[in-house]
Length: 508
Length: 56
Image 1 (cartoon, helix red, strand yellow):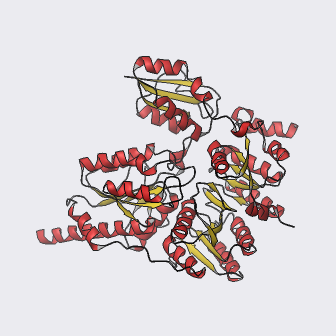
Image 2: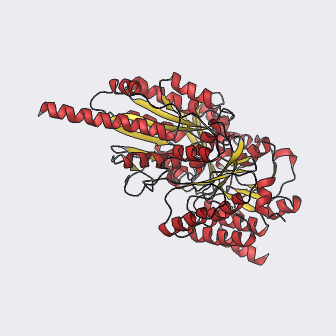
Image 3: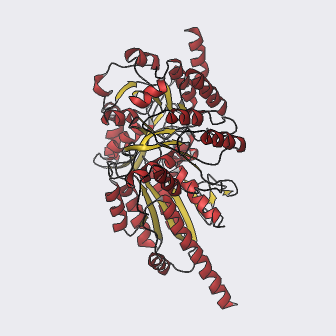
């Protein structure tokens, strides 16, 4: 078994394509593992950690260089690396044999009716492309993160003046005229319009509405920072306005983490003037609706859709979970793909008076000193910048999340591992299947309770029912929403704490 | 007259810049997508890219 790397200077490929290349290489006979990544510092570090280092050019490679790392039988590894280019040319050619367009201006010249630019280039180049799109009269869906707040403000101000919108930066999902853009679930069209600065929040809300039998007219993502002091809700206000004028929308739901105080007032005043019923959910603000579930219920009610209350967690489930846990186990570790779902879980614990640490803490919660090391109760957002620089989001590539689950599972103080599984376009073809080997591995070593929720619908290619069943078959306790899964986990953690107090009282 | 934003909600036509699969999934869902074959400008040096923009 050998580990070797090759570096190609100044070769750019997007991270999703590189992951597909790595999978093709790993499938070759004699190869046990393969990575193809841009040589960012974080990627070089993680390759070094698993034993790759020292080959020519590796240590001096930079973020514009490509590194291919392969392990396996020496002959197979050498054969792959000698012909590594073939794995990069096997990619699907630009679709439909379109002539190649090298800029947004060229694309718009070819299709003057183009209306939306979907931009997912690395953050440092994103503002530049977004500017080019606005100049060409396009609305912008900006998936890229790591865009300076001054750039965001300039882009959104410019867009507003042109009668356009910038969705993002750091916008994961929108639904525009039935088209799911980015990480989007297959949801039916219906009366509820969503405006969300919270990406997986939008997915969860849209999926809950779909599963309740209704649908959404449009879902406009605005980017995580839109309601901050610095941006002032520019895109949120534009989105509310367009949905108010949209005939297909009868109810408008706005979902966000807590905005800056004066921005909250601006949004509230705008919604108060709205001619349609509205629902405002500011997760973590302490006001109702407090969860995405409650927001969905209110929006459905306003749309006149009657829907059955979702099945609740039961005492028997709780008793069974507690039975399998030994006394030294008392902590919860949340390993999330969805940032908003991580945030919502923290809100649910905070509101119950239980302190949780996170790499992305909400106000009042402690920040983990090292995002790679959990401590006591910890909720990790695996989609945070430190985990995705130069590699695909954990909803696409489960590698880091698998490793993290196995590490948390090896900690003898851990009682519960809380997970989210996010289905839909762009996401992995089998989110449950990606993590099940690690879940089973942990279960064989220790009696940890796995709690999960699945965000999606039966129309998603991954299929909500099939994913849920696969997890349940492996003994994972699956709940009807991320909020329900977090609430059940909270029940377990509370009861474990009470149990510990009883033991102490007995001993005293 | 419809604004470009209203147009985008009525019948969106997309220009995809960056991760190819974003465009592919829209295309598979039946929407029109034009791909831009994007590479970091000026070999990744933004300062030089901006200088070049000014010259053009």
